Amino acid sequence: MNKPEIDGGRDASLHWLAAGTVHDVNNLLVLVIGCAEMALDDETLSPRTRQLMQEILGVGERASSLTRQFLALGRPASRPTSAVDVAAVLASAELLLRRVAGDHIQLWLDPGTPPHWVLAESTQIEQILLNLATNARDAMPSGGTLRIAVRETPRRSQGGEDADPFQRLIRIVVADNGRGIDPSIQDRMFEAFFTTKRDGKGTGLGLAVVRAIVDELGGSIEVTTAAGQGTTFTIDLPRAPEGMSSPRC
Image (cartoon, rainbow, N blue to C red; front, side):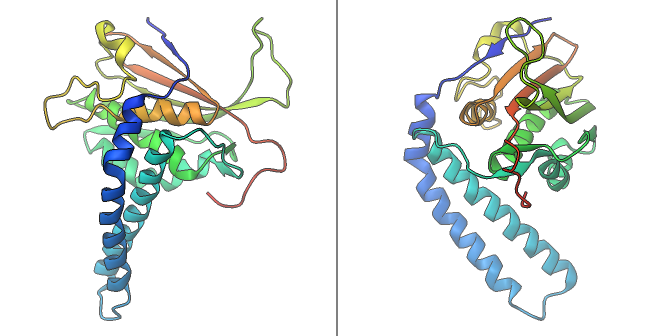
């Protein structure tokens, strides 16, 4: 069972991607969002059409926020100053996660005992979840099980004992029972633009973005995988200090 520990570092290629494409993509998203908002002003829309337009608007706004995150990946990190409940983000992203996973995969969501506050933007947590869910789906083309759990856990000192009880972590565990990650590529799995998928089937950015977000939030990511036995991503993020919790998600 291989458990590579991944730590810090931004990829220069992500900076190139942001500088070269994000501005134009965001301009297109502004048009999508504007058209959706105008359509929602039409009082003759059927309830079903209105619901679809609201979904288009919501996804467009999320995507616009994500383009800003790509730009931020190329700049010096600036920690968020407000907190988000990871369990609430998991709940709000359930519909998207089920669509990403597909009908052939059983999805189990376990939020633990919320709230689980971390200093982050909700779109950052959502992007972590969606990218890891996509990675798991691709590892289970014939079906399987995907489990996403959130827990609070003590921060361990180097000797293994619990550290200061007020310095705790919020742990996100994303586990699948797919084919696992080949040992020959495990050292490159977080490398930007590296992909084993056929042309047009993958950008090689999903796991790179996950790592970059985790790094920016001051967290760590560990991968446990073996051929034919699935893959588990364990992400630890610092719990937000008391008094930093925010009512928004």
